[in-house]
Image 1 (cartoon, rainbow, N blue to C red):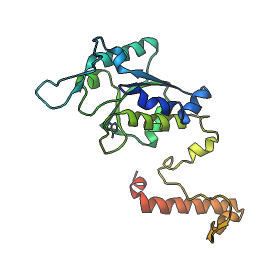
Image 2: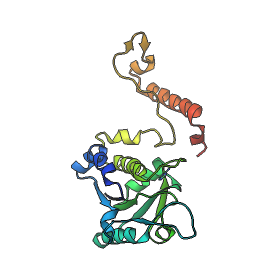
Image 3: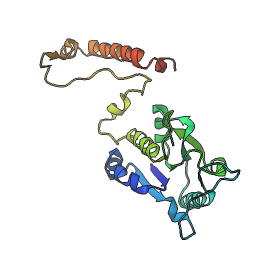
Image 4: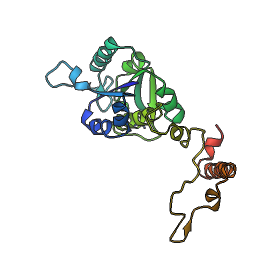
Length: 225
Ligand code: ADE
């Protein structure tokens, strides 16, 4: 899988893609993440990527031209399954979207600025607009980092024990059961007896009940899906 991230702030993402799970996936040859500085696709000496809006509205607007030039250059090298724009009014990012995107070969993520992008980019170049939650960030870089992390970690082989990606909370629209490690007792705080019993069937049943109870209490909305 290959993810190309287009941004005006590549420095913000550089450390992240070279340190996190993304670095591990890249070392294993399971993913490639490339950053593209949008300013490298400008033609003026100020390397401007935005301009004043038509209609006398406030703020600045990211221009079509550098974005189109960057996306065209990428598309000349390979084909892309998705060109994603990070935006608070996009479809909501969740585990299902992460799973779906983890099966794509190549994707572009354009880090946007809400209200600040020429609509023609959205109309002609973008295939999917994605929001990471109902709040407004100052730019799409954090959203791109969140998405890349969640997408790459479910690519088979990226995290050692495949079972652990499959048993993540949200994989079944449920929160996870509580989990413990040694010692069995610390300061009088005890690990539930059932987990020490060695009875696998009973432990599975307990886990299921705990997960259900937690989901009902903290995220009842998940059970409606
Ligand atoms: N850009 C600004 N806010 C965002 C959000 N919530 N999700 C994705 N991109 C954004």
